[in-house]
Image (cartoon, rainbow, N blue to C red; front, side, top):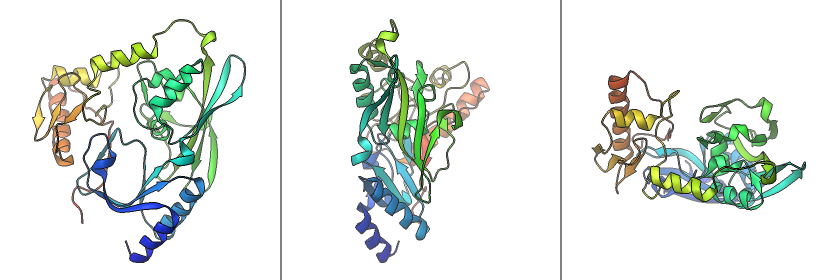
Length: 307
């Protein structure tokens, strides 16, 4: 990246160069990003994206840093993280038994879930215990055993690589298991969820109950990225890993959780290379033991070695 490009970036937004990504992921690994940009407004975002296109710089949108493995060589180009105006959420249209909840892409998911329930709304509890930001969770079609975001989305607004805003209704979106099909160059700006008033529904566990169950079955207090593998049809990846005798297996400073087999724990100082070796080991052992090929859920980005 030339000196001129660096100077232009610094005029558009708060930027840090050669920023270690290990400081920005829940797993705590990852080499440096060439440029790490914090963007507070839509104009800052548009200006940086125009600059990226003009100079043919690759860019990557960072949410809360969960469900992400950045390789040891780091990320070339720009890492873009939304904040400021993108953290805002509010109740929109009210239809009586249903209301629309509008949330910016940088809204903190656990905070939004709790707030929505405090407002007497039901639906967002499908994300109880899920970390990260709304934008990242929309892209992942995040969820739990209670459901997923595809069940709640009314519409989303995205920014394409040419800095044009587009609003897309739910029926036009292509959701899959733990994935929304959008170009990697597009950025989710906000999402609108259609929720029910709690008076319209009866029963169901409380948020406290849901979080307590998650703490009892997942290593939420340890350093991890969340689930490493997608669940195959009709069986959990964690169960397959446990049945393959892999709980507690360690490579270097990373080990498979003894509480839940689909979580890899960074014991301090782990490298992305160690995690990649463990991913390959698990896939091979599970395939050998069960005949099932596991697919990674964690998003793997960056370079193995810095050029």
